[in-house]
Amino acid sequence: MKAMSRLHQFANPMRFARLSQAILPWAIGLTVVLMAVGLYWGLVVSPVDYQQGDTVRIMYVHVPAAWMAMFTYVFMAAASAAGLIWRHPLADIAAKSAAPIGAGFTFLALVTGALWGQPMWGTWWVWDGRLTSVLILFFLYLGYMALWQAYDEPAKASRAAAILALVGVVNVPIIHYSVEWWNTLHQPASVLKIGGPSIDPSMLWPLLIMALAFNAYFVVVLLWRMRSEILARRIHIVLMQRAAS
Amino acid sequence: MKRKHQRALFVGAGLAVLALATTLVLNSLGQSLNYFLMPTEVLAGEDVPQGTFQLGGLVSDGSFEADDEMGVSFQVEDGSSSLSVVYDQVAHGLLPDLFREGQGVIVEGQWDGSQFVASRVLAKHDENYMPPEVAEGLKEMGEWRGEETP
Image 1: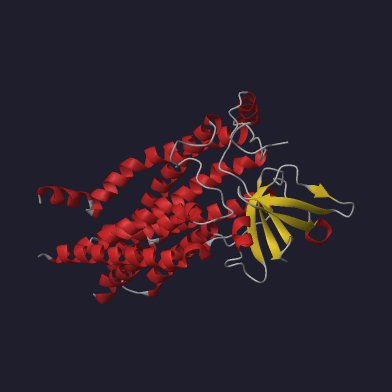
Image 2: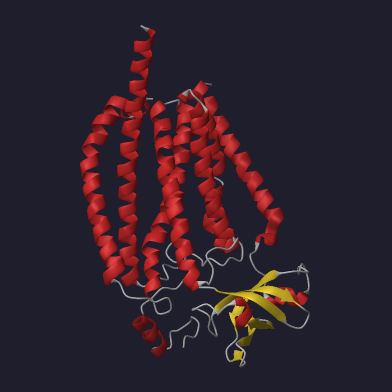
């Protein structure tokens, strides 16, 4: 019980405002440094691939974007569950704020994948298990965002949207295992696989730096979005009070 | 039981039912979610679609032939059986960059009982990424387990 109340202190919006204010400059600095190092290493320093040549460099954006697309969805679903169970507005705000970021990551993964697929596979798109399940992930994000817009009261919107987010979470393991369960055009995992990565260290390092950069970017934009959502709700309350008096 | 414990139970039970339902659906859909068939499956004749479908496998070493009119033919194998594929580059476009013998390939077209008439050829890329020097080194040491490269 004591641990619970301590957790609730962190969920206090005022405390969140102070905490996020302290974290943001560090997170922004980290994002800029990691992104600069990762992009330079991946796009300039790292070697070409023995088969793909320079086209391999698309991977340094595509793979982190795809990882973050799934990670952001799991984050959104977990925050939604917390919001449903504990009825805490900050959890709902976290879930709502994460959705457009996740949709952006998913869109980036789809576009960079198509740009890589055209020269390498010979096609922009096929309806195989991996590509189709990631497209469904993109539509889940859009549906979640649309559901928030469909209600006037945040309390009602958060409940409906949270249920959609939780139902959609079954898609995440399907995306990950699609390349193992079914025959797909998309290649199987190179980094997160049994027996260690099948990617040369000279390419794995810049990829991991880019993955960290995307993570730091996620933290920055999430905190920004949550702060502005809290402010927007406060402004809304003040305007309502003014209109009432 | 407190309200929040009730809600937690509800969310947990809902997710469990959802996971079970998804597992059952995916199980019953089974192999129909595959993007392509293997040569063995086509030769066995089970579930082979009448019209256009996708066939996948490796391009057999030494099987590639091109004629004067830009038509090509090659064998696609899956380890136990192989099929011959014909493809017309004038009608359907050039082969993709990664197409080569020993490399994975997916062809789209129709099976006429003796050969697969392709209208589209896609190169399949594997999950190995390395610089050319490393690939050369592996081959010299005899550690090469991947596909042949030119």
